[in-house]
Length: 116
Image 1 (cartoon, rainbow, N blue to C red):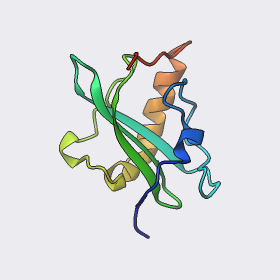
Image 2: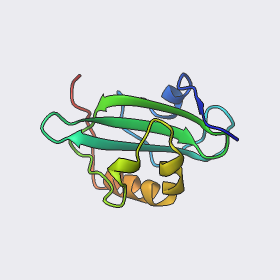
Image 3: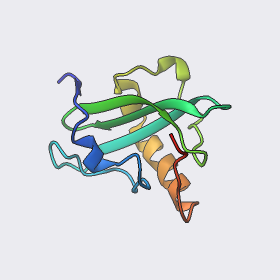
């Protein structure tokens, strides 16, 4: 199965203007609990980076450039040179990414995204 870039329904899975939920998510396309999210800061001064939302089961995904929240920290095992719009590299790391995100979320009482 190939990856399909179709982000319309991913706003239901994780709304960028609200606090993230614990992962994995229920995919809005196939209803499997295989939805994942990852952000990666490329510029520490501006906090610009990338956002990936994807489903390991049905291979639907969304990728965008975003202002990454200040509470975020990149997962050290993610090789920035391996990142692309398609999430196949991230999908191979999804269990470790989910654990990292859930730890970040649990360390915060209230998560706030920076203004755009």
